[in-house]
Amino acid sequence: MTYDRLVPLEAASDDVTVSVRAGRLTAIAVQPTMRCTSLLASRLMPINGLTKAIGRNRLIPSGRRHWMISEYESLRARLEERQPTALDGFEHRP
Image (tube, rainbow, N blue to C red):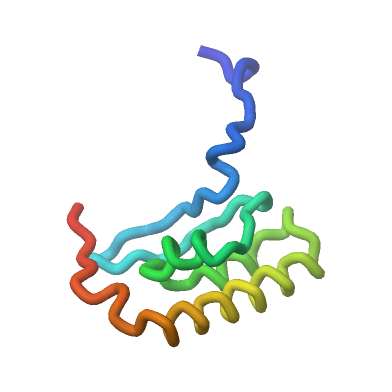
């Protein structure tokens, strides 16, 4: 198999690579195409270290990285205010 047929998938533009240790999800890398929406922020709430993963991605221009971190933290704070128990019962199952 060769890699010359690989094409980008728009559906994967918000994917996050995570590690799982002792049931804890930690972000390793984010796509440079990742968007910051309240829906995505709510889906990513169980993942720790997302802002660090954004900050490490040098494929994202510096200004956009800072904006993404600020926007994600703001969205996450708003979601936590509205639904403080939204993640109750969340448990990773390998």
